[in-house]
Image 1 (cartoon, rainbow, N blue to C red):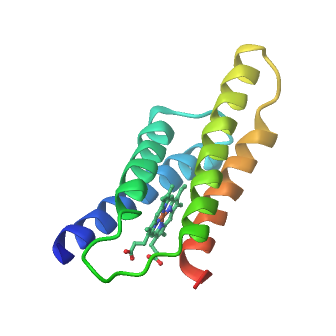
Image 2 (image 1 turned 90 degrees about the vertical axis):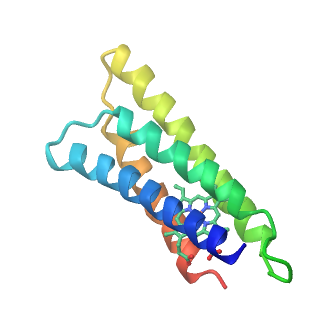
Image 3 (image 1 turned 30 degrees about the vertical axis):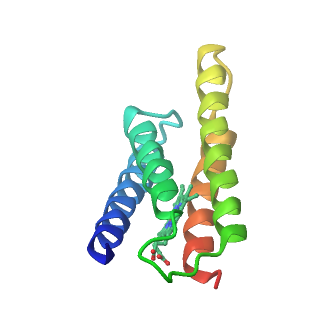
Length: 116
Ligand code: HEM
């Protein structure tokens, strides 16, 4: 069961790489829109994160306040995807919500690492 948790952490980190990498690839060419990579990355983060929230192997201690905050931030990222897509269709500027997505991705990584 330990190896399963470790494999899920690896999947979670691959999702993080896709999400932040997808965002950074757009940011660097100043194209403030979302791509399929964003959605795949966030889907992996939420899917693997929820599986990691299951308390296994036996005896593991999980901080459910921390995990709830991470879930709320992840859902807010999804909401911001919607804002970017709607604004893009309406021909409105997308930079604001796009940078907010980057800040929220980083916020969740900071919470993951620094919240004990
Ligand atoms: C954009 C969304 C997210 C980002 C950027 C993110 C980032 C990370 C990172 C960098 C780690 C590894 C660092 C560490 O273990 O200290 C981690 C671990 C973890 N994440 Fe996330 N995460 C996200 C979403 C979620 C969600 C939605 C959940 C569950 C509700 C979740 C649950 C966990 C758990 C349980 C671990 C610890 C794994 C372990 O050591 O057993 N994450 N996350």
